[in-house]
Length: 600
Image (cartoon, rainbow, N blue to C red; front, side):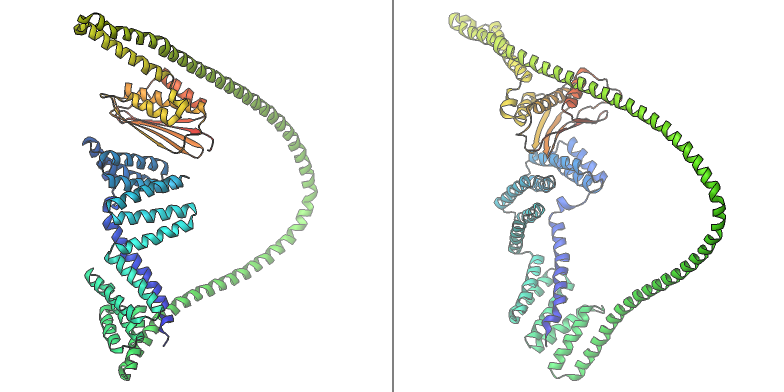
């Protein structure tokens, strides 16, 4: 009896069915914090409560859910990426390392979609190392699955396969009930191919025990069926009969292919035990059920063939009708031919007159079109010249500003700063000459004011001419700028950067620095903000600058354009960028500037 070949379709169905119905509930149950869906109102409430309670973890979870909402409901992946990055930063501030690495891994998978696969893999590896150190086997296994996906997106099939293999090995090591059932079923099929039926029966009993422990009756039925089947292959017919009967009771009245195969195996068992009457009974039941299933399939096929035949008949009828209509039309055409011949002479005269008039009109229209195009070309040339002159004037103005800043910074640092330093040195030496001055309050106050003046002069010099920009690049210069703006009574300023900024042109880097400096000054002076986010993102040929605050905002229809706003727009226009400002009274300000740059 060749059972192996007949069992192959069931084997494929069984493994797929287990993986679908057993592994999915495990993920939803284990990662409920991250996987549980929230409505729009729930997300907004979560973010608002987190801000009011000054709870960065609640805010982080709210921004995480908001990013997924934007990604799934509105399909806005660009803003979702920004919100996910904000969630990662807030998780880091909250000190929740597990949630931080979990959200950071999600951000990494989205980075892989933005041509940043190498950085994404590095982040996933850091999260994987963290979960290894913390002993969180489940999340360690999840990181392997995500690494496999990123490697697959990058086209690295070998690494993707290795990660999937490691994922399977660690899944087995977890000793999870559902995972063990899946793994044991896979091993049973390999043992069946090797004809090691006793080992397969042992594993089937372990599956039965695990299915009972998990309180899943449908899996108990499958395990009992497998135990009976392997005993049938091992020719232990009494044991096979015992478990086939159990499986039959568990199936109920469902008319499924499993019941059909079960009847076939019961026939084989009773036939082997010389119970011809019972064997014949199950053979009849097997045939009836097989006929029922076959009839159902045949009815479907018949209905499909009938529909096709009817469609063919309709097509033939339509063809005959079309031929009849063509014959009628041909008769009409012959009748009209004589009438057309009579009209042909008159039509030729009319057409000749028509073409003469149309040609004359075409000449007039062509003349007007040529004149209009010439005027448009002239206007375009004038606009190009005006744009070139404006850009040249703007470049001269900006270069003049930078040169003046550099000169003032140099004078403050070398001249005024040197004089103040010399005065401070002399003041420091006076107490040794006049001991009574060390206790004089006016003297001490003058020395303190002098120190403050030197520090303020150095700060002004650095703001006017950032030396770190030319030495270390844009990221370091902005980092130093943020540090200088931070204060004990000022707002909290967060700085994030994604991508490589090492190859930026100095002119673009300088103008980006001035733009961020102007935006920070506006937020600190006018917005009354308690928190400011500065974010630099380099993706391919684009550089994005995002500055957001939670201040009082303003009405964009009523706000006046000041010198700072004009300078800001001029700088953005000079580097061929685009600026978008989103704000409303009481809702803060979000300024997004995109600048085209060359690829690294």
